[in-house]
Length: 225
Image 1 (cartoon, one colour):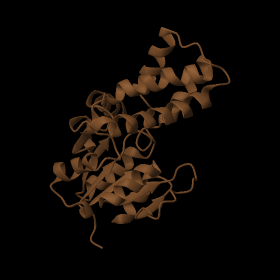
Image 2: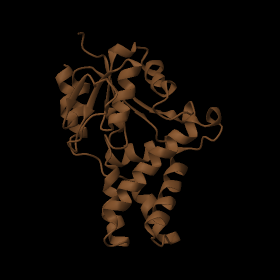
Image 3: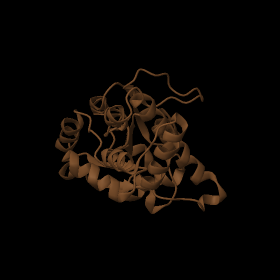
């Protein structure tokens, strides 16, 4: 198969470690950091699906708002007293999530090969801007694409279509990289070449479709070339 002409990365969970908030959560709520980080992430994604599929998207709100709603729900579910100060600190931590260490190396390698690079994310533009600047990745990305422009979260096809519109390429000419199995699956259905980064040694979704490739770090995207 021809080599991809562009590589688009999911942001949250793929370039930025969504579970890194668990360290602060553990400081604020000893013994609950891991549970808080996991349930917060699950609820955040559940809300994206809920607002996208209900009433033709009439309930859409930006990802930042869903992230806050997910935090508040999680603390209620776990019986934790989320003070205004705790809420502010945790949300600020989410705004500045830790970047995975291989990000820069991989993006530099792709740019060196003349490959178009970008982010295609559920995050709203402000969130993505802060995360990219904090990680120092601005000069290594040609595109930072937010589903906020179409008001539909992944896995809606209109979200993935943003990559086609931005690059001017066919889906088969684009490699899409995600650590989230549901995202890699839907991107494969859409027609992208896909890499599922299985950082946590999990099984892939049992829906009859496999990603184009599976790896354990972002470095595995270079196998396309």
